Structures are given as C-alpha cells and as structure tokens.
Image 1 (cartoon, rainbow, N blue to C red):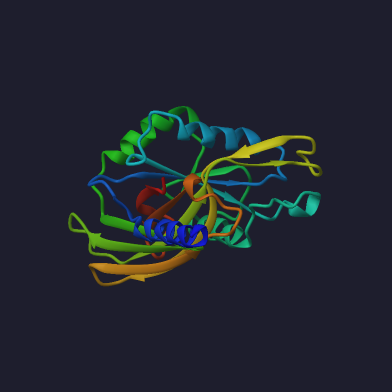
Image 2 (cartoon, rainbow, N blue to C red):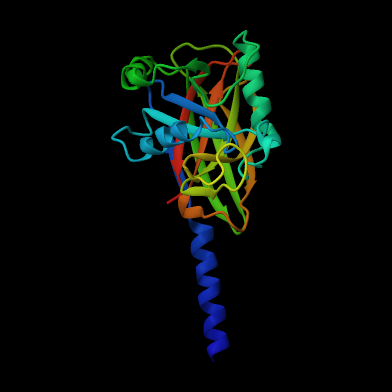
Amino acid sequence: MRALLFVVLFSLANLTLAEQVYTAVSPPYRAAMLELYTSEGCSSCPPADRFVSKLKDSQLSDQHLVPLAFHVTYWDYIGWRDPFGNPQYDDRQHKQALLNASKTVYTPQFMMNGKDFRRYRHLHTDIARINAQAAAVSLEITARPEQDRLAVNVNVERMHGFNGDTVVYIALYEHNLGSAVTAGENEGEQLRHDYVVRKLAGPFHARQFPYAISSELRIENNWKLENMGVVAFAQKPMSSEVLQAVNLNLR
C-alpha cells in the first residue's frame, strides 16, 4: 500500500512539474540589456560581480533592465579554472568587440545593448534613455520544465515600422552561485554571483515575421530551477546592437 501511495505521489509531482508553464512578454518600449563579461580568475572582477548582484535586489524592474553575466575562460591559465566559464562566451565577447570595431576585450567588461558601457554612475539615466525608445521587435517567451530539460518557445514580431532582419538568442541563467577560490589572483576569496549564464542558444535568424523559435535547454543535476531564469534577446544580424530583451523568472 505504501509503495502504491509513493508511486501515486511521485506521478502527481511529475504531473505538476510538467504542467508548469511560465510566460513573459517584452514591453512596448526598448528594454536595456546589461552584459557583464567576468572571470573568477580576474582580481578586478569581484566588484563588478557585486554590482550585478545588487541589481537583483534593486527597484529596477526586469521590464526595464535585463542583466546577464557571461563568465569567460581566457583567465583560466593563471591557476584557477572558473567553473562557470564557457568558451562560447569568450567567442561572443570577441564577436561583439569586432562588431564594435574594437580589437580589445577585457574583464570586467560591461556592454549595454551591445555597446561598451563604463558609465556606472549614470546607470539609471542611461536605462531611462533606452526605455524612452519604442521597441523595434516584440518577444514573447514561454518556458516549460520537463524533467532534466527546459522547453522554451519564443515568438518574434516586428513593431513600429522596423523592417530589418534580426537574430535571437536564448540564455538560461542562475542566481546564488559562488566559489571558494583556492588558486589564481583571487586565491582565498569566497566569490558570489548572480545572473550567471548557464546556457546560450542561438543565433536564430528571423527573416520573416512573425517568427517562432523552439529550443530545449538541458538542466544539469546541480542546478537549482528555483534560482533560474531565461532571457530571450534580439539583435541586428551584422551589428552588436541589442534591439530588445525579455526576462522570465522560473519561480
């Protein structure tokens, strides 16, 4: 009888999980997307990581600002391998720099809507300036957990006379991560991170509208779904410029 009850409860739990569907729609104005390129092997990165973490508890709505932290790997050689690093994020940073006609990448580097950003004291002013612009595209994102995967759908629409193509990316991120660093420039430090990109899917090239995207993102065993979210963002195909972004919290 107990075995039967366990099977019933387990089945109901799986059914509940399968029925969870999360949805978010981008605003009619342009959202600001702040990318941080960082590394646990870089001694000047922890203050930038803390800056991003504070955004989670700020009064800024994710309809106005969408932060993402990309951990790069090119500092791993000095003694500490960043457990959140991915060469794919190195590649994105280099491509964004190239599209900005820059030969240099560095950490910590912030990019606001695809452009190098160093005006930290003017963050709210710059977000308001971006939010004052009408959105070029609309993004609707839907996510459904399926055991060890997240099924994600994104619908893309043109807005306000925009008639160009766009490429779309999907980023799965996680909060409340950290490391006790035992080597490298941050040896002895206890580091903490939020908005850490775990997966990046794309680019998906939208040439006709409306455009629908379907993607499955694997969720590893040590990742906590209640601390995660998924972002869809659109940028111009031959430019670093991010046109729109939408954040979906999975909690």
